[in-house]
Length: 321
Image 1 (cartoon, rainbow, N blue to C red):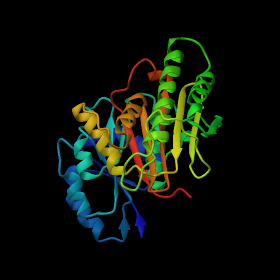
Image 2: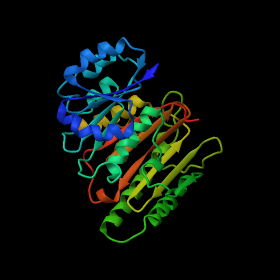
Image 3: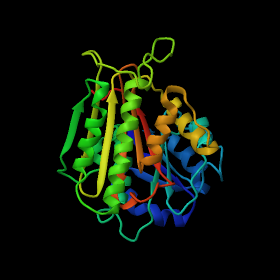
């Protein structure tokens, strides 16, 4: 069976914008205009193909064609969907993504420097390639090749300040941007630490096991690991726990509720998760239910002075072993 990745876009302007990236990523990406969708789908169904990933432009969905994903699932019920936007486009409302179970959103900066020259655009290529391969993002995917990364196994709730100090020392340099990057990094470690120690552990009935701020000694059966790296331009970090208590639906609902209505959802550490997304430039969450949750992402020196309003996320599931 032949694998084809479909990219459904609005018009020729969309083709001009996205084809340089898609050509770089994979020759299996097939772009088609929305006006050709029905005819193309009908012809594809007569072939021995499958589409593990379908990419859709935000210039089509969710505002212009709100039922588009529901319609496509009639043809490809098992495909993953990635919503793709340019930074010059309006940020899409997230509640339709909850309804249609769209777990991937990439915001690509418009730039005259494409692909290898523009790191952010290169990261778009990495994100799409990972989804085609069925692999979750890792912190090394955000960093320059060869950048050293660090891993710390948490054994006590009293380690938080030590871990924050270690990250601050790693972010070397002077100037207001560097100092703001340190502050963002410290806040993110704080939130990730609190979520892993107090938000992730649940009883079978869903109740939290530990009160926030309670002293905890982590026993050998529990795994909490912080990883991070800094390449001079970008700090990447992630926190892993072995509870796997988050669900993809809960993550997506949390982001949507907090973003679209400015109301905090507290369930399953929802407020902390939204704050993490708020301060990151891009969020990745990987869940192996009942076994593992990894929450991470990146912050760039270029954006250290402000909070990026238009940002993406990846929510993936499954075993990584």
